Image 1 (cartoon, rainbow, N blue to C red):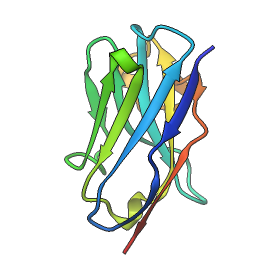
Image 2: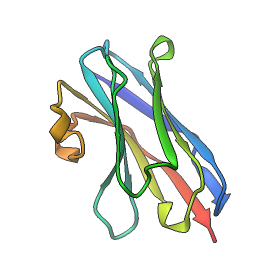
Image 3: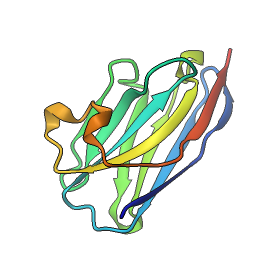
Length: 126
């Protein structure tokens, strides 16, 4: 069983920055992919970014490319999402997810992931 715990959300003004953390436990993650999704009220869960644990390869949604950076710290079993130049439309609950041996072309689908954290609220004011 994998446990994922997010932290780092909060209220920030447009143009500001936040760093989200996702602490993972319960398994070794060498064959896993880790991702961030977000969900705004009344909207479907949206892919944000993903990282392959073993290679460090990353992919991003077009809406966050150049502003967000996903990274991992293997020693701490933690994945980060550095969010810069935040916009009001980035406001959502951000969820961390993990899944084993996900093909690259499936990384953007929430159905590919087996484990989810509770989420952390990010609110960007204009």
